[in-house]
Each structure stands twice: as structure tokens, then as C-alpha cells.
Amino acid sequence: MKLKLGTRRSLMATSQSQMIADAYTATTGAEIELVGITTFGDVTKAQLSQLGGTGVFVSALRDKLIEGEIDFAVHSLKDLPTTQDEQVTLAALPTRHDVRDALVGRAKFADLEPGARVGTGSPRRIAMLSALRADLVYVPIRGNADTRIGKVTSGELDAVVLAAAGLVRIGRDAEISQVFEVEEMLPAPGQGALAVECLSTRSDLVEFLSVLDDPRTRSAVTAERAVLSALEAGCSAPVGAHAVDDGHTLNLTAAVVSLDGRHAVRKSAAGSPSEAMELGRELAATMIAEGADRLMGEHSH
Image 1 (tube, rainbow, N blue to C red):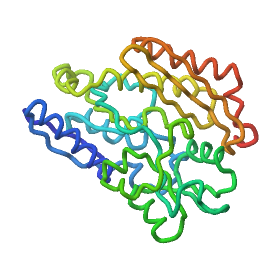
Image 2 (cartoon, helix red, strand yellow):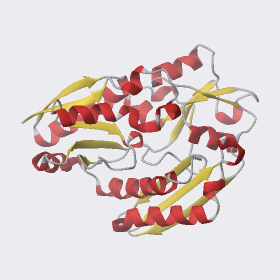
Image 3 (cartoon, one colour):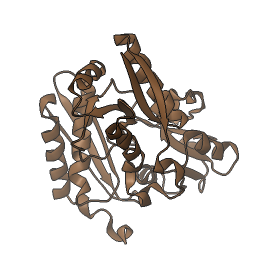
Image 4 (tube, helix red, strand yellow):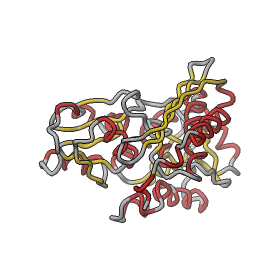
């Protein structure tokens, strides 16, 4: 069996795609060839928030799936829009890695001087970091992990915040100054998880790819993404969510934070892993009832 795996060309994307390819080869013996694809999100210099968010990295890979140039694609799950495209199926959500955010900087977060410049491309990270330390300057940045870490090395920034799992995948985890516990900084929904996607019509492939699916990862990220999906309609404030399926119970925590970090609605719930979607939706409804959708205030204008 020979399959073509489409991937973005960045070091991060090819590293994680190769990792998944190796796992399939080890499990099934299939021969897998990586096919590099340049996406609009990779070439434009605009801020991600202006590009219509996360879908910019995904659509080019989906186009290649539909055109039949590749058999399947690997994405960082947090890059996938929460609205499901009927043409494609999430055939596998492999066992999730570290969900946490990590600081790469001149010092630990608490030891950075007041006014230190911290770079991140994520409104969620800016809001959560501001809640911890309002005395630092948060700078929106773009670019791959190498580029971002380079801004610290060059002295342009004092620190950057990136996903811990990504830094491990590209072998840069020795540079992590500190990992934020989920209690301090709730991760993005789906953070640390990878998604294996193929065309819905290729049932043989859907079945083949499902060998790497991890049911506990699937229920956890389903709940997290259900919160995000339910909030997205009426709330543009940053959302963090984290769920853990211990095999019996699914525990979910989510937060919506104002961009200045001063106000937050944070809630937890527990339920059956088989009802992950409902658990996420119900938690989001509770959060909206407590004013989560009003947290943008003057920042939305």
C-alpha cells in the first residue's frame, strides 16, 4: 500500500506529518510519501486574525485532497475550523501530546522585567498572559517557530510563547524557559493534538487511517471544540478549553477572557465521554448565561 500524505512545508508541519507517516508505516507497513504544499497562510504577511482565522492553512490541503493529488493530510487540530466540511472526515485523532503553552525567553515569566516585550500571535495567549501580568508589553507576531524564537535571540523581544508540543516536535524543547500549567493558562481547544483527514467518500482509507485514532483524545478534543463552536457565534473574545478523559469521566474546563485580561468567565463540568459534544455545548451555554459574550466590551470596536 502506497499513500501520499499532504503537508504544509514548514518545519513544524513536515515534522509532525513525518511522525504520523512513521507511525502508520510501523503499525501497518504502508509506504507513505510526504507531499509538500504551500498554503495562502504560509505566504501572506497579514495577521492571522485578518485572514479569517485558522482556515487559511487548511483549505489548500483540502483542495489537494478533493483533486486527488494526495490521499490524506495532517493538521494541527487547533488550525481546523470547528464547522465540519462534509467532503472530508477526521479519520484519526492520534494520542495527544503536551497541551500546554511554553515560554521561550531570557528569564522565567515571573522574572521578566516590567515592560518586557513578549511576542505571540494568539489573542488567547495575550489575554491569558495579561491576566497573569498586566505590566508586560504583548506584541503580536507571525512566522514559524524558528522565526519567533529568533526574535528573542536577536534581542527584538524578551520572550515568545508557543505550544510546548510543537517545540518538542521540532526538537527545540531544550530552549523552553518555562511551561505554563493549564491552571495558569488554559490552552487553545485541541492544542497538542493532530488531526488526520481524508475524503469522506474513501471509506477504505477512513478505515485504514482509523488505526491511529485514540478514543480518549477524541472525546477530550470534541468537548473542547464544541465549547469553541458554540461560543464562536456570539463571542469574539479569546477562548481556552481543556478536557481530560480518564476512561470513565470526561472533565472539561473552559474560559473566556477579555483581551486586557481583566475579566474572565471560567467554568468546569464533568460528564460521560460518549456525550462530549453535549458537555461542551452545555458548558458554553452556561458561560454565555454568565456574560461570556459580553467580555469584549470596548475592545471589540
